[in-house]
Length: 209
Image 1 (tube, rainbow, N blue to C red):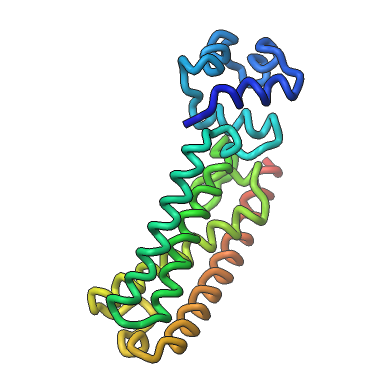
Image 2 (cartoon, helix red, strand yellow; image 1 turned 135 degrees about the horizontal axis):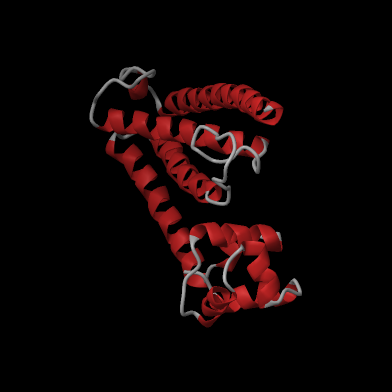
């Protein structure tokens, strides 16, 4: 949940009055007052605008309890990934599963910092106007992590994966880990290159209009 005291702290720290912030956000002054009184919760778009204005991460406006819940979810996902490996009795899958679950979750939370304003969009619908190479990198890693998790899930249910054959995933632990790491990197790099090329083309076309 957004911390009302932090909303007030960052506004005052940036020497902004209610009137100033109202103009910046194009939002009624009364609404901003209600945010800082805890009577009203800012919308996600408003939180992103505030964070951009204060040059901080949107997560800096949330309560400590919110950040603790994020940590707890990360630990649960880590254990879930490890458990997958124990089920199939392969520690290579345990390691890759733990990493993939946590990386996927963390990258999705980071992606929330990006805007979905007007303009050309990335693969996941985020604005390329406010993004940079890091946006392509994050989305490419999300796809690679998701693929790894799908591969592990298919292995659990004894179904051939999209690329890795079931017999390969029965190989010794380190062989499986190596194969999955190489597959992850290859898919991430390929997705990044494709996103980068199409993203630049979309930006160029948008600016030429």
